[in-house]
Length: 438
Image (cartoon, rainbow, N blue to C red):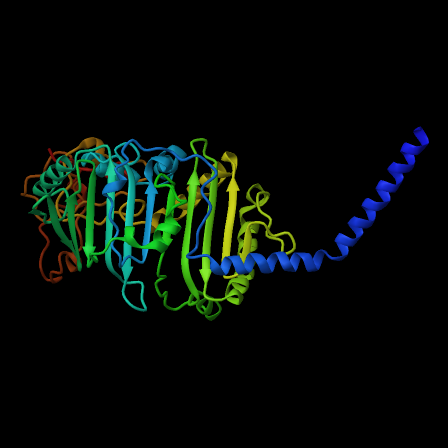
């Protein structure tokens, strides 16, 4: 009985090995059939639909999404969960690495719009002029735990005090202002939503657009960052190899989602006019992605596989190209530290936040704590005293006489009235004290 069982086991193993050999011989053909079937199915798909995020979202307190309306002429639509960015620690990174970040946060606090705490989400739409990136119309919705009427009153108060260089004109339910060539109209859409419009906005509603609804259905409003491009704008002066492929894009949708534990996932899907455009773009993106990953180092690279034979992060199916990757919380923290180094290195090129502030025409306020020079401050010489009879303020330093030829551009023939140097009190310190006004 035992030998018969062994015999049956040997026969089963032989049959199994033969079946495996046949399947391996036909693997290329079977793979081609599967890929062709996926390609045909992709051709029938409308738009560029992403999968629903696998990670949890950070929930804001205010969720009045039914009051949002995007016009039918919008080319780009998106949203930003500011509460999620605060949970991530992005604002703390900016505060630690941008010299004057507190100026921006203080301005938002004066308006009662602290990011992440009061202002929770932001939604936007944009349209562009033909063959350019010039915006023809844009609209943004600011949603959060605030009263829109109170924000408008604080804006009026700041404008009257001169703290903000804008002229605000009251409108029914909001404010109007202009800056440079742009015009902005702010309105309250309920107690917790402020809409800001610039340029021309269409009258239709994207809720009636079947393609938009199909692409949006798998993207929650609470996603950290999401976007849908219905008609890609024309980007001028692109390299030829990129310009030809960009012209073939029909739709783009995607998101970056960060969960409460700071794990990150990203998915982007692009639909092209032809399968060949999608395939060639996949290879181009894979090559660029590989080079970028080499610069980020092994901490990030270990989560990616962009090898041509086992590519899982960048895939093309018919006219569609998909980019998908996830990072754990340690990798996300590593990217935050890299961002902090970048901000610290290039903060001088960020005006009003990290760069030098423009010089004001008006004198600085009398505040000794603010005006006291630091140890590294460069001494500034006081103006030369031209008339000894002029009473001097306490703490002023008298300088030696200047030669007549260089005294305010006067002629050498003019006799100087300055006292001789030996009658003056010598200056014993090389650091000139700064006079503080009372």
